[in-house]
Image (cartoon, rainbow, N blue to C red; front, side, top):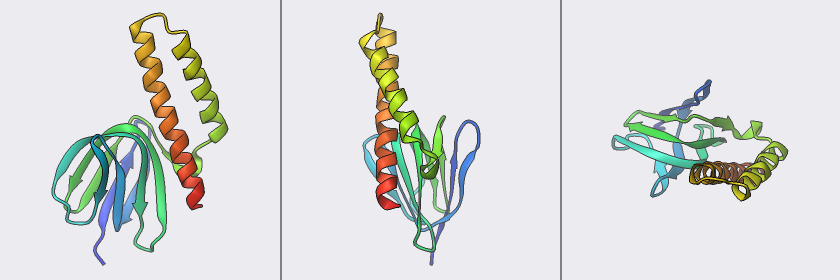
Length: 138
């Protein structure tokens, strides 16, 4: 069985490192699926779930708040400011942060405040969706 080595790294730590049969993640232009011996690629990714299919058939989920994907034939590297294992996502905390971002959006006093709040809201909405997807699988 052919595998590919996967590293998912946040600004603070390595969140996942190991062999996989398949990796799926949200590219800028749509969902990307990476198999071993994939053509080299560097692209930006959107906030969402990285789904890693392990050699034993189990799946690992990692939420990323956007970032950069580098693919080599034998290695996938995901670099993100924020990356959280699916098991570590906290729905209550995410919902509170989403409410705070919605409040900031309503109270935005400048275009910069508005853009910042919209960006934060998009990341939190993706995080909540990733959490729900993870919970359905587990």
